[in-house]
Image (cartoon, rainbow, N blue to C red; front, side, top):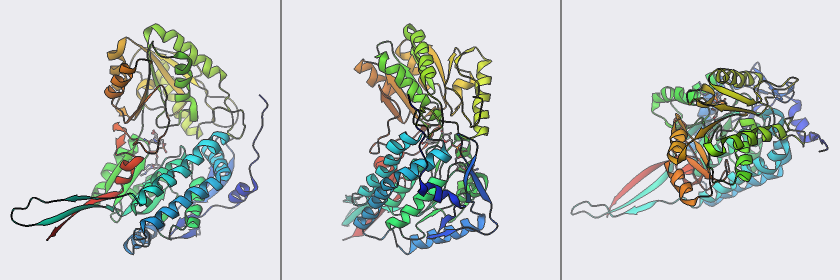
Length: 496
Ligand code: NAD
């Protein structure tokens, strides 16, 4: 296939020319003397731009600004129709700016340019449009209270929870930001969003689009900064009413303690180790490429990545061979190259952690069928890696790798498959590959995870809730559940 390397647009080059300021109370702030974070292209290891990191004093100002904007009702008291119109416009502006946003996600976040342009950016736009619609649909309930001898009229309203701190990871930063901002804005909240250190630039561009669409100053504040400092401050701050966090289970657990000062509401979208079950009756011509795509797309840096494959014993060898073939065919390269099918890992440090787990796993009754060593050359590439495992205790099978590394294990019958699938502290996602309809429903019901795909994997659907059981988190995003996490129920009892 002919290689075509996408040329970065003049708009993106201009955006990257100067250190990017952050968004505080409707102003773009570049604090004199503040640390400038150098943004690195994971495909080359070279610097591509920089942004200012917000300092603790900036967070204090942002909390005051967000609180003021919430209390004076400049956003939450707009008519639902007006808020709908503004959020819909954010969606349109994202769609109009798709090329620049995809370039930024590719240059800083290591995404593939074409899939980002065709799928991820349109999905971010659609997230704002989906939640725009909820502004005018959020309703309450009526009751006839059972108070002896007195007539009451009762109703329940869903009120915005208040000032929300949102902390997001580096993988698919623009989509992660949209999944957080759109429902919180639809509910009427004011927000302080902290992007991850390794992927911030597209989120800053989104901030420009939010202002352009008409989101009033102070309602969304975007403060880049370090997790251990700024993130921790957001979690502990007593004038922030709720924290919505997406990231690792380890940091999620730390937030439990941090949030206790004012008992702030907490939702956690955490790690995963999602199983892919392939039964002997599956159509292997779709199941094997499907299972390969479930782990290798996004270089495995996807929360719902299908990182544990279980194949029925009679087809185990075929599945292993098929996965190795799929890995061999996969073109690994920079996201700007249109022929690349898998991009780099996000950083040198992350590649080291991926490789350490592979080495650790390879020591314990496991057979590395392909991959398993970092690629030479510039950038933080790691090859698609397939490891046949015999023991469920192997750390590479047990722990989240967050890279293009999949374990394969054989199972004997449906009960054994379910037992393996549920043998994890995580419960984020799963897929079941079978042509037996009854088995598909039984397995989907028995697997303890927030979502189960049948004969597919990783397809997002904005109208259906997604989130984790067990140590994969608390709460759900998407759908009405994703809106409700930004509301508090209020009962009103009116004596007649
Ligand atoms: P991470 O937990 O290291 O960081 C996530 C965010 O938390 C970043 O913004 C970081 O700066 C911040 N942070 C770090 N330490 C903090 C602290 N002590 N207090 C407050 N904030 C802190 O995760 P990551 O490496 O950026 O992302 C990868 C992880 O995210 C994986 O575990 C992946 O499964 C998970 N993830 C989950 C979902 C989901 O929907 N369940 C989606 C995407 C990613």
